[in-house]
Amino acid sequence: MSAAAAPSEVLALTCELISRASVTPADLGCQDLIAQRLQRAGFACERLRYGEVDNLWATRGDGDGPTLVLLGHTDVVPSGPVESWASDPFAPQVRDGVLYGRGAADMKGSVAAFVVALERFAAAHPRHRGRVALLLTSDEEGDAIDGVRRVAETFRARGERIDWCVTGEPSSTRTLGDLLRVGRRGTLSATLKVIGVQGHVAYPDKARNPIHQAMPALSELAARRWDDGYETFPPTSLQISNLHAGTGANNVIPGELQVLFNLRYNPSWNAQRLEQECEAVLRAHGLQYELAWFRGGEPFYTPEGPLRAAAREVLARFAGAAPEESTGGGTSDARFIAPLGAQCIEIGPVNASIHKVDENVSVADLEALPDLYLALIERLML
Image (tube, rainbow, N blue to C red; front, top):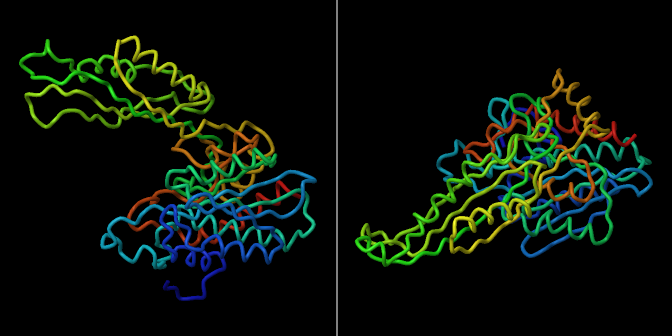
């Protein structure tokens, strides 16, 4: 890292985390580093390792009052071609007031800010009410099977209560704090195999073309208006992403067609009902098929209440104007926490560079994040 002056506490920790090339599902000691710091601040740290995935659950306080969880991940996506970067993606560098490195915005900067905010809160309010907690995983950018999804199952089995959850995903669009994420759509993926009979294109009567058979059903699914939206959610959407068929020869009718599609859906639906609706269409068109579903997570939505009100007030103070309140974007690990009964929001840095070459975060924004998170913690827990 190059900088004229000694780095701030949050900048130094962010750089230390970036320097660990924790490409999902690896953690490479990020959580150990954080646990050591939080233990010194009076947090009890529990490590929940499932398969190749590390999860950290750090708590301070007791059950006499609400539980507020800060949720994040220490894994990052691959850097892509290193030569495309202006500097080594895992050697953090500050240039012209901007920190560059894989994970700077998504989301090692937020994780570092969480840690600093929690340390400051514990030092300033050693006898705070309720519990403050940090939950980290190394499986957010990957399959998301043994990360927060699995931790939530553990929490449900042992009756762990979470009232409020703040995820540090990069939610801001232009300036820090200009957007408050109050929900996310659900995601449901399908792998469909339509079975036909292979044959010569000159003798279609002796074959059964799965592409021809599937097209009307796929057209119906793609054209369907599933709903008109829900609250601030857009309408549910089905998108076909992959089609595979054929032998490579232009005179052979293929024996099968594979189709991948995904639904992003609002709280008007749940995964089970969508599956039933899609399969009814396939059956109505007389297809012979095999279908495998993957439920990525149900939608969640946080209505008006203490969490949204506190976040709106804090963000307006930092951004200079009330934030946009949105349910857009893809998914986050909050989708696994919300079904435990928690209200969930997302607040983080500007997302313009996430998953890109030369991922970055403004140093000024990064250094404001601990104060923002601390103000929110104090507003909710004091």
